[in-house]
Length: 198
Image (cartoon, rainbow, N blue to C red; front, side, top):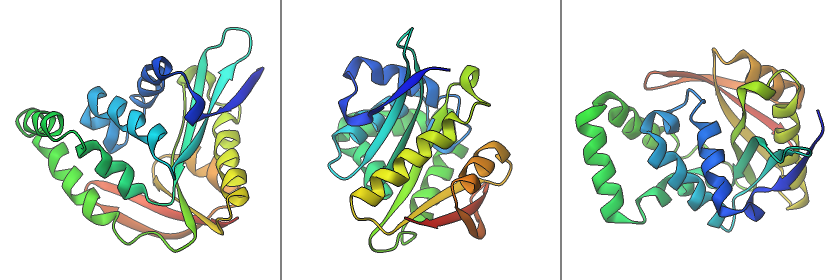
């Protein structure tokens, strides 16, 4: 597998659709909100001054293989979804009528995420790999790039929350030196909270 990592902030805006498509394969809350939310999330994330990430691009075909994203304020990334009030209200109304339990989970998760961060730390918000490129340690490499960049920017610690059933992500994260600090419930999600010094 021959690929190159690029800063997510330098991605061609047209390729964000591919990032959103890859993320839709993730079983987390954001993908459950639907494609419009996912695309808007990443559009806002690349504009956020403090967020940073990377995407892997296959050298021969230029195909996007996966991506990673980190932020010292993950709740800000989520709240950016509401910047365009009209759009956000329309999407929320649709969600309430079509997927009320997902809406309820969104409320629970937005409350739970508050106060999880420490000063001078970052959150590994996502590291997601297209299914056809999994099993080759690409997720681990994408997450390690976040750690290296976080260290360069002067952060001292990195956190991640991973569903307890997601053994592949858990294994990759622990291989990067993370340890489980606690296990908790966030609505229907049962998660490990992991951390590592940078």
